[in-house]
Image (cartoon, rainbow, N blue to C red; front, top):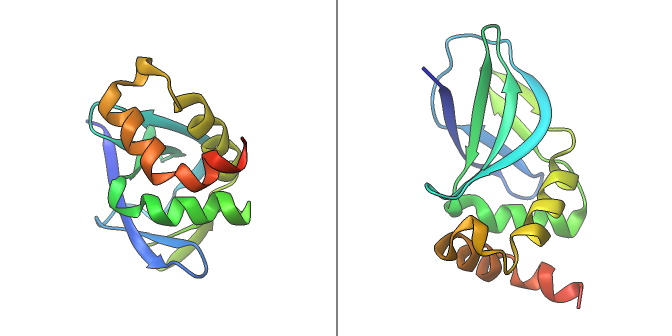
Length: 127
């Protein structure tokens, strides 16, 4: 069984997200890798758990806060089990993915359009 968790915005000013689900353990280490789920739109940050990986899903409802991550060039934090953990490499990985997704039909048109629309201000800066 995959350990998947979704996030909500805990503090947009400080770029802190919180897990929506309770976790059974308080040990979670950032893996420093961000991937995408283009079938069920989300950016997915990988974490190491005591047994296997965990998948922290950043779904479209929180993407406006991810725009701020790119604007500030700052890694966000994740709040869970009374802890706050920095998500290293998040900014770099998100930056790379957003530019790779732009106009790339391999991700699926619906996902590409959603990313292009949400991150339009970031993508326009590169032109």
